[in-house]
Length: 130
Image (cartoon, rainbow, N blue to C red; front, side, top):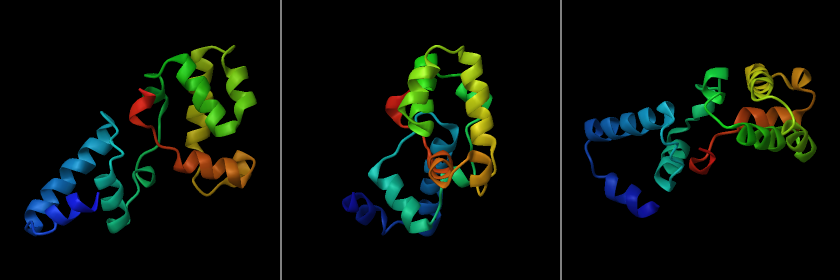
């Protein structure tokens, strides 16, 4: 991880800006979501967070299969919710998750508790999720 950073450090600022722009574009477009050591290191160094600029929407969530949405429900709300979600319609899961992600970032009261708010506000898809 540090080897890649060390290799890139001597690049001119303009080259680094172009590289960072490319990495940001790939992260924002969502295909594929690359949580690589270099991206994590750059995010830490630059103090950036994709979730501060991007939130999963109904349109984006609809691209997942029902079983994946049920799993996400379990990750966010707890295993019992994930199991129960398997018996629901995909459209219902998309709507509920869209509403959940649509809550204001600093609104644990609306989400019910601080732990849930933290899970919702920090959740990011992984390459294996697709």
